Amino acid sequence: MRTSKTRKAARRALSPIVSLIDQRIEREVRRHVEIASKDSLQKELRTLRNRQRPLELFFDGTGRGASRLPSAPHLDRTISELVEVTGADREDAERTVAQAFRLLIALEALGVGRIAGGTMSIVGKLSAVPLLDPPGEEILEIGTLYGMFGAALIRMMQRAGREPNLTIVDPLAGTQLQPGATMGGDATGTPVDLAAVRVNLSLAGAAGEATRIQQGFSEDPEVRALVADRAYAVVVVDGDHSAAGVAADLEWAERIVAPGGIVVLDDFGHPKWPGIKEAFEKHMTTRTRFGFLGQVAHSGYLRAAPA
Image (cartoon, rainbow, N blue to C red; front, side):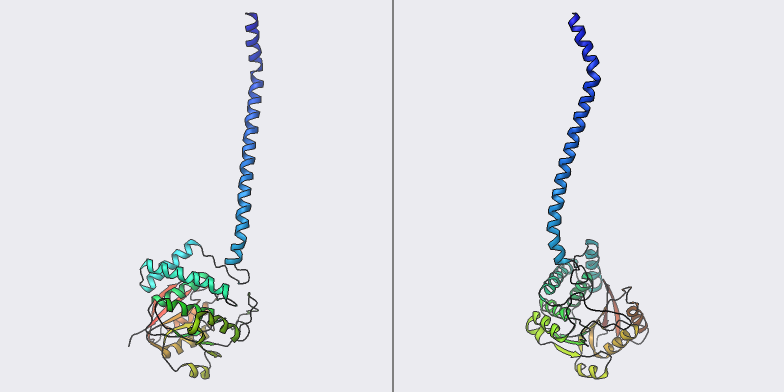
């Protein structure tokens, strides 16, 4: 009996110590679990980083100047704008955007130089033009940089069952030119010249190789005379981004766009190039043939009145 009481007393005396030991063991167990969890998480993060690096080389701006990986909100907004501007259903718009995005990545991987502009702006133009169903096959691109966008537009039109004929006007002066802006060397390190343009157009097959290229400025009367031998179903205005330059190109487009033809204003509404929207707004106060269809990403779309 005395022994039982002694044991009970001993247990009561040791209870706080046992409790402390239990708490210490529990803390140690939790700490080791946390350490193991952190180690596992860190290992997973290292694996993801190792996989991310090649993707960065593929999609990000290294050697290009702009990332090609769009965010989900930007992608969804571009598709919605395409539906609104072109009248296409959402399924057609999504399919065309997917084709245009894959084409952009493929051409920049295979070609020399790059396509100027952000991903959604480029994808939007490549998608909108065929979806707008221009009234002919003649396309004029004012300002081409490396010719890669022209090659991509040819391919997108062909995917829509069209047989495009492309004409390009660009000074091809070795570097990108913009009045009032210091452009410097291109991020890709590739000279902006005729050789680079021809290499990229060849990626579009026979139609690309048949492209007419007129070196010079679009406001030059001699240059205009050389390429104004036909009516154009599509005119892409992507040359001089100043208000005066865009105004001159819109004035010219009034005379050379076919009835029902499409005019694409690149960098429309872009804060870096306010002169584009300024020239557009002023032009639309005149007796113009054009009606404004809307905006997709940073491109504005006009359609000439039918005959």
